[in-house]
Image (cartoon, rainbow, N blue to C red; front, side, top):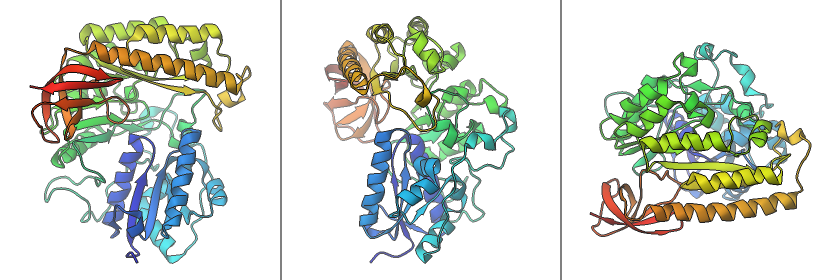
Length: 466
């Protein structure tokens, strides 16, 4: 029988959730809870859910039910819990508690309540954008709970960290040479298909000094590559009164002792400035990697999505990138079957994909999301038609990304070793892109090795060390 004050954290969804889980782990450890990896050994299992799309919601529910079957107390946290609150608690009695972001700062006490059988009333969801001032520069003084932005507990004795030096509100739940580092939370954009801003809130940047402190802490825990995450990294600093804050921060992060690579994710094409492109392409230690959220390439569809750009503008942006860094990595996601999408619009998308030479492409079929403007739009496509377009574009994407990988044969790449015979080149982000299969001289996990690409398998590369 497990010790009652033991807790296992299960993280679903994106890298931002991973950072939030590690904050929760630090808070729990600081309040005397013992963290264990195996749910079967835990008195309480906390599932950090994802609430972005239907498949992620289903995965979250399945994971909560599996945790309940382990015999442990079960707590739902994360985006799905925040988004649905009391509705989720009512529909899922197997969860002993459903907690929102406002509960994170007192997570230890909340879990004590669960163990003691004290009822925790799940919150009624609200639009978290309304909790912060409209003006971004007025937000830093607001006392609103934002995961990943909390103050240190008064008692930091239990926090993981070096014997002396700064303490960071984070406890690593996994090892390896790569870690996400949160730049900001929330989003001020109003894309018609996206519900994230309503439950994640308005855009709030972390202070540069705080980001740098955590980067140094991560380096001290064996991290060699930092992956900067947020809902929109190109907006970083706008609420701090400095629209060039990211350009200034990147060289400082790359200079942190022990860090070999800094990678930025979640770039908005309309906000990707020439100065930011230059820093990403020319700063030693910052990889020329562009995770650009295009979503489509037809101007009319993008305007219905309440986004900006079109095929021509997007290709011009890629031309600017490759002029400075010809081998830069570029990935993006696209939605097909959006309300009102015509065959001509679909043709614009496929023409763009054929010309863009992207390294990684994610394609999703449109489906209604609760609380979004697009859910109420007219000119909806038949689900069978959406599925057909999804299959068509997905097949094209698979072919094009395989061709792009073939183009890299003969090139020399720097590979961060993450497994005995596998790693990632600069143009490959963890989890979402391809990998490099290594041959030749054995290397240690965490090494940065030079290798020549000798082959490709889909989006993956095969390379010889030396």
